[in-house]
Length: 102
Image 1: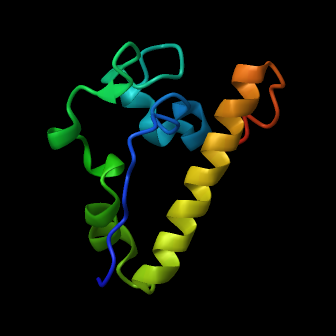
Image 2 (image 1 turned 90 degrees about the vertical axis):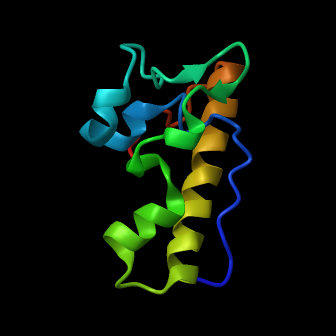
């Protein structure tokens, strides 16, 4: 792996777990938000020990090593962009495609 994924910890993924389907259900606090996400601090309370599903590089090595890393990163970055757009739309009250799985 030449480049690493930079997570700016915006929380867009943590705030929209339902977009990932049942895979992340064990993290859901019942409102579609990760139970480890501190809404006030806008941060993961277990970031250093977060589940494998939440770790981009480790997830690549575990599940996606058969595709080029740069291709994987493009997909992850596009997923982040979609999540951010959805979150912005929801905050503006537009709804958008906030329920659509990515």
